[in-house]
Image (cartoon, rainbow, N blue to C red; front, side, top):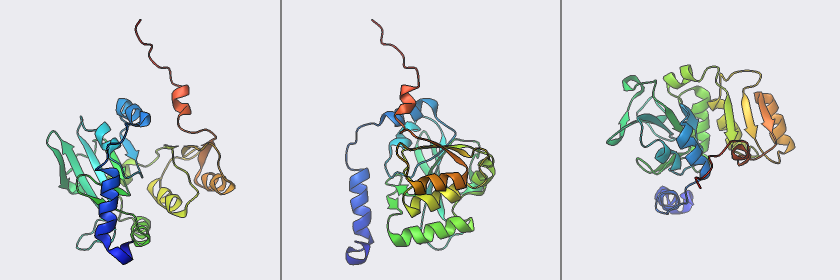
Length: 215
């Protein structure tokens, strides 16, 4: 599509899909809004996670590809009561909660990693260490990750994940909830030190006590 109808067509289609339509609120995003983890990586291109954190100051990191004139391969925003403001790693409060959306999204400004050329450039920059802010590299050391709703049967997701969780804790580096994992997914998770849970993310709510309605 990009080659035949130019990049603007891709951007317009994704913005129509993820920004111009009214999507039902996901139960998982409400759950995240309640617990508000201090560091979340979201490869989806929607804006529900941004809505979950809209009421508190936080940092938003968007991946970017095929740009010049900067040493960074990411866009960094800080959020306050007035909305998002583009900034640099040297000017932020690195203790704020971090939302990392490597595939980008329609807000604050529509931009996406979507085509093969985007992925090739972005993954190359990830491997070179230029796509992750330095304060995140320091903060992620020894972290454990919980993978929710993320199939690992495609090379792009596996390559992005491997670099984003670099320096994770060991034994285990985290947990992946996949209901029916393939042999390839099992091997990949074993190599990364991620423990497999053969269930999908809705089972989280089955195990979480829910408040009873009055009356």
